[in-house]
Length: 265
Image: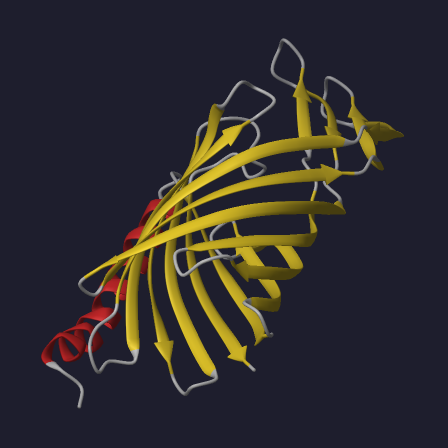
């Protein structure tokens, strides 16, 4: 039997997310924060002796839902060391736009424009997650180290005269880049009795290891998992990224509305 807390969550959830989307869209249209969406699909398989393997694919749009931001494909493996401690490792292939740039002269006219180009990135990570349950609240702390590398690539740079006319084009070779981050996340989820919905919130900090733990981003998330059946789970999330440093690729604070589906074997 579904209890009262579950009924309240079912009624309020569309209202809360609808209000959040409206506020995010208003912020994006006013020229402030960016707004985007994330669509994910994944599969998990429990193996013997505490191992779980998974595969996830994600598609993101940003720039007020108008621009392709990234596509990722990520296999992973988890190992449950004890009832309260889990180890994880994974690899992420990312395909996303590189950073375009416009250079201006001292008088404000455009000198050249470097075109953006979709390029691959490769990421590997390892993590430890500890969890503790009080009543029906599950608290977890995850420490994750990740290494991301973008190989060198060649794009084009268009030059313009001081009168705004096109002048000429030349190739622009961009060097490879690497980022080392430590991501620390504190999360809480509420297991409501006799309810297929599990709400959760989390806060995460991104620290750059190459810059002596300088914070590059904060991430806040709220969402709910809906266990449709024993094997099928839908997720609805709202994420707010607050950019603090140049290690973040996007460069803007971003509201991200997410919809996900996971099949569990």
